Length: 108
Image (cartoon, rainbow, N blue to C red):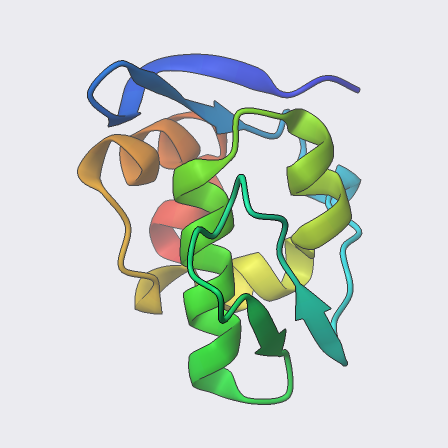
């Protein structure tokens, strides 16, 4: 199932990428994850999903920086995303794109 590219922008010139269904997001829920350079330019790209701050920071970076549906499926877990949605610090365009596609996130 492909993700959609929205009319909302993650940042100038970059449309937000949104999964068609939260159920397709089957990323890891524990362990240490290292993001590829295209998603995190810092030399410190490893995130401990057991650390709540690391989890939020990783999700924020993936949702903001991705241009690929595969990144969403491989790195984001749909249930976890729903659980932490309100605590994520996202650009307005990213938040609006996801909430437009997944109305249940508005009340998550």
